Image (cartoon, rainbow, N blue to C red):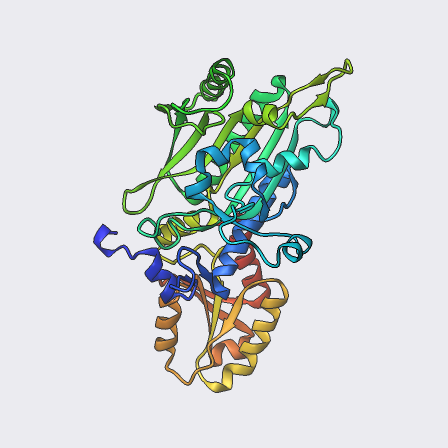
Length: 416
């Protein structure tokens, strides 16, 4: 496809009724029902991957006292300009003061990242070496104070959904955990047909922790890449302030480069929060913290995916997986029966019962990027079949409903 023919994800989102933005909430998308199907299917997929890999799902509060970010170091790095900070007082305090005093400093923050709260989860009770590695996953909403001129559809937003995970491990477990994360990243991006590159981001000018720990973390990440025989390039001084990272970069349909997945090795935060586990000799030790995200953010990933497919999502992601197209009103009853059977198996099926010519119904289903179309006329009524065609025009012939279900389910299960 010529790049001049590629539609922007915002246009596709409007045309297919997936998502949109409104000035009432700058930088925060509104998800329509069809868009939420895509969102939830991606959530389901990442949960399948993480559950198989031994992650435990958690959830942490959206708003917390900002002393948490002061302890982690995020406040010094981002606090005033990149976070949403709010002066909020408990009922007893406001009653004593007759209302919140003017000019008071903000004491709460809408969380811009999950990692500090993940340390609170870890600290819930004493930990033993037998529990490590402890893999805690969270699909959570974050808020970042992006500049209005930088906000762009789903590519750069103020309300972000992250597929975060934080792994607490011993020093000896670092490599196995990073190998597994790199494997998960490659499996994930291969599924969508993206070409990806690995980048090793090293210590920035302003950093937390010791140079010794940074040097060790950088060497460990580099060794993991070499052990997996993965080509990579350097991103000098582009690590997080608390640790170096391996980033995955992809190119979208317009050739623009985006950083999505990341794995970060962090010795700082366990020290800042005094995290401990008891080793096999009964001694208290610091765990290592590994930060990991596969999508990067749901919003940016869906934007790139929408443009990659130009709205023509594969059947497993498509909001409507098959459109049933009865030729006349006489065929509606059988179409409704087929629709009921399909939906009972979990297939997302819809019927077009408009009094339109068949070609108009086929055209509209194709414009809506529906992957399968089921045509029902006199012949199909007589043989209790459905004539199936793909959105690209390929004719699959007449299928019994059971065969149609199997065909659709095969595509959905294989995610093709």
